[in-house]
Image (cartoon, rainbow, N blue to C red; front, top):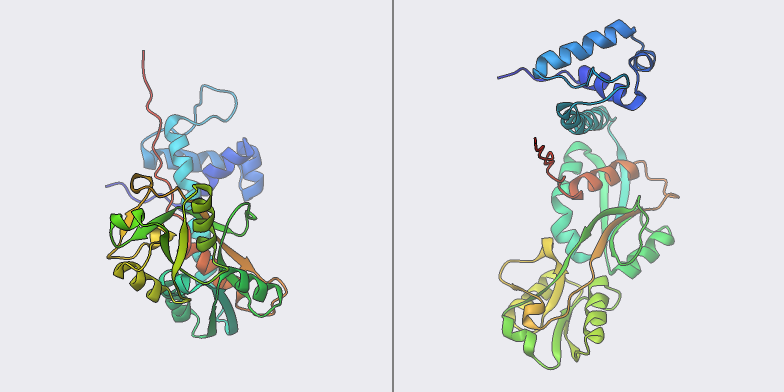
Length: 296
């Protein structure tokens, strides 16, 4: 088994790619050009492969170099993140989070547990309400950050991930009921509005059969057959069926999971907790599949 590659070698490799020059890399890393060349030789010896095509006058990667670049950037990013997080001073104070009941019960508990273990001096206050009310609280300065679902265009810095919405019911036969009975959060919920718009666009009659601001109660109502509902696919509970167009229900527009910060907040904990939430809820990275090379 080959020994692990030193991060210092990976940093030199990535810097060469970014600067397109061994000399400029030496200037940036405060090393001589021969020292930079020696590091790349060590890297190639560790890999057993060449990472630069030396038949070209300009800096050009080999196929193995292109693959390494993908992983090197990820490794260096994780290394920087770990050093930043672990080296962070102990924090104290209060941080106030606003979110929906389902996110507070399903998405946040493990994230907040890890953060509380690392920062025992922090008090975390969680306020649950619908998205409209939470964003109003954020605007009024009553909370420090908001984890909400949004539709339409969102700011890139606020987007964590995009979620597919799916219909859920106790049995497929419920999709055929006229009017369609819905189990939903009170008005102001993005999922409720998305369901209503999709059904109206499809010319489908519907009614509110059950409403609650508690996600456990809504799930129980769906399981009992009181109504159908819509949730992010990743949050679909046990004991329900996922339905769709095959059962006669219209497709639902996706929603965006967003983290919005109150930049006027004086909480010393704001950025640290925001980073923890982004990391905990970030979509899984796509698996890198190198292109197949066909030879004549």
